[in-house]
Length: 84
Image 1: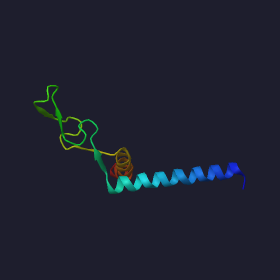
Image 2: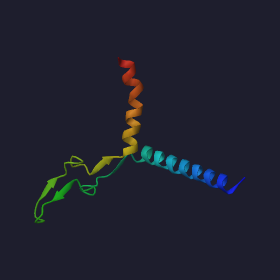
Image 3: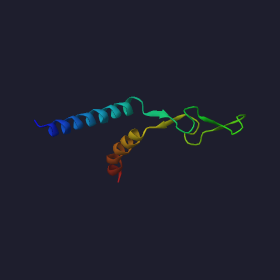
Image 4: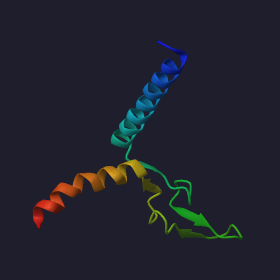
């Protein structure tokens, strides 16, 4: 086995491990904290006296992960095709 074969094999293995880890994360924790309000569900006014509800997460403080969104779309494809 040449060094280039070893490097490419280790890159493929590392990519596979990272992908499976992200998939597992999307299954166990489908939501993440909202980046706009940092998971609080509300935003402070510029003068720090009042709050308003976060429009990005609809005041829940949670957003669906990108991987989970993709999984939901892929899961719905056969169902939508069957209903036609």
